[in-house]
Amino acid sequence: MKVNRKRNHTTEFKLAAVQRSIDSPSTVNSVAQELGIHPKLLSRWRCELTRKTKKYEDAWVSNEGPQRSTAELERENRDLKRRLERAELEAEILKKAQQYFDKKLK
Image 1 (cartoon, rainbow, N blue to C red):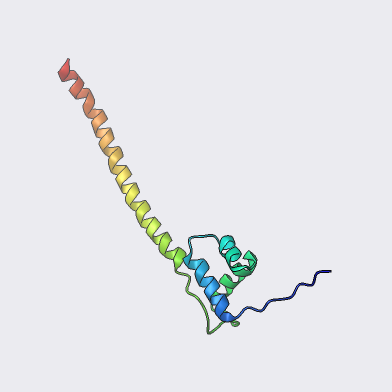
Image 2: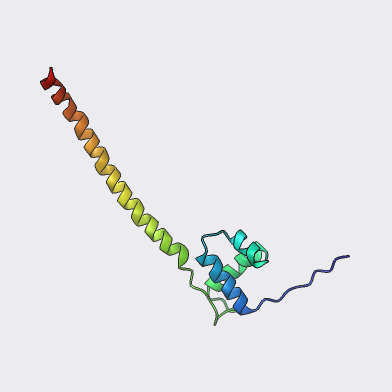
């Protein structure tokens, strides 16, 4: 019969694990596997430590990673939409102008 022993992780280890999972481009599963913990445990720590809960009032991690990248992606998306709209307008103008150029060549 196998006995499972509960491991107690320090708050510093939890903070480091959560910060690593936020900063890393890897998934929570891969970071948890590297640290030797269950992915659900790391996800729970992320929920607890990114919000100021009673259990971890003094120790918490700001979750700025995804918000920063989302803002950058939205800005890039707006720029690309603007460029696409301009390119479509130029293509439309050239299509309309082509009929006039074809008449002069004949």
